[in-house]
Length: 436
Image (cartoon, rainbow, N blue to C red; front, side, top):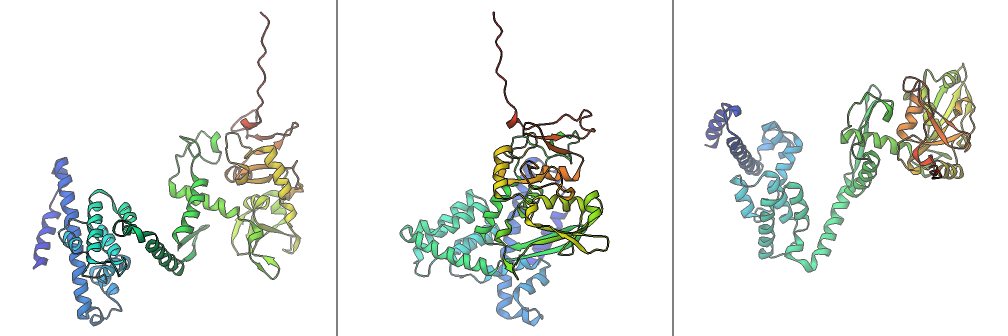
């Protein structure tokens, strides 16, 4: 019985001490282990198919072969579903692939890709075309990893029927797109401590569009760029480079805050816009807290920052929590003012930052909450990150007499608090040539 052989293999493998092996032996043992794992998974699929034919899942009180396999082998339902899907493919196709999988010469992932590709070929293909497709994919499997093999498998029809390839692949894409739309979902779950988890499934096209935007926002633009602490590029306390996932998360936050309000759906004459309620005294002193219309709390400093540019309408309350002022869109710089700011500032006004005007926020130099007007002279462009610094730390900004925005560092950074200007506003002085 195979179970006796597996038990002997497990006993031998558990006694193996990798530190006793040479480099060459480690490579050989690793390949042998991967080969054995693939062969055992091939056996698992065959046994699962036999169990389903005999009705064992129903007999054991399980609702499906997937549930039965997960319960019997303690694998996840996702993994069980993937293995069960292989039992439903045409058993007359992919004979050589199955043989190599049984022998451990193909990984389960490779076998899955090839068998699914063969099963998806048009019904009118003859045996010779199926054989050609299988031989080509098996050859690719020796050279390419699973991701590349999957891309090649999706286009295998180009090899066996190049004249009809565009039509066939187009039809396959339509079916895949419809299935993707049917399976699209998104959930946002509160985790506590000011955090939420986002989970879901998107069609590939829309996912790639979102990913492209986020990677453009999250990727360092300069070679060797390093993310630092709350003082940005001017801090001596480097905390290291952020990983890709964290950069993508911060980029999503930036993207959400730049969504255009005029594209939101209307309900009862009002756009789907979030409001923030905060007490007048907290707004002025930049202390305390505020509340979104979604019943989410946020700090007064973040409420003030969002009031500069984001699609959030502030509702200022008096001491009795009664609305005393509902901020209108006039607190936001309009299109003409934004064009003027872009022309004047040329992008983020923070020294060394290269964010373009399109991804900058219009900051009120004299805060809107303190009576600062929404004008070009009282505005300045700052990117998402540096706008945060101005509201969450003791950095400040002003408009100099010559119409250039200057950033003032706190005394702990520069005791003399010398104004900093972006290089795009530094004018070169012509060199004076002294007479000989």
